[in-house]
Length: 114
Image 1: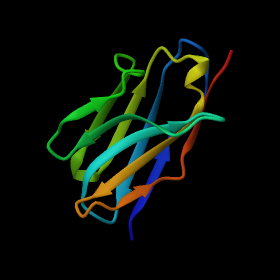
Image 2 (image 1 turned 120 degrees about the vertical axis):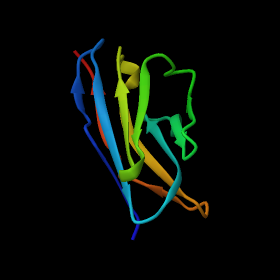
Image 3 (image 1 turned 90 degrees about the vertical axis):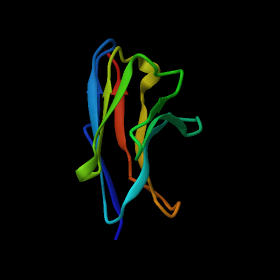
């Protein structure tokens, strides 16, 4: 059974940093990605990594967010810096299997506020 679990959300002040973790299990994954959904907005892709080691970032977070991956354990980290109130959202991890099936975690809330 595939499971995707995020952790590490919480409250952070503007300008601060926060790290999130995602652990996927139960299959072999070809792509893992971080997404977020702010209130009243659509879910957006932040960054993804493929099994070949390549990483892509959305322009909105390039230079502020960094992905790192522990491939043997299907664990992906998202280090976020220079956080702004506009970064407040539920952050989701998605893991895609080699057969193309997407599996989402339940999300973790990040709140950026004084």
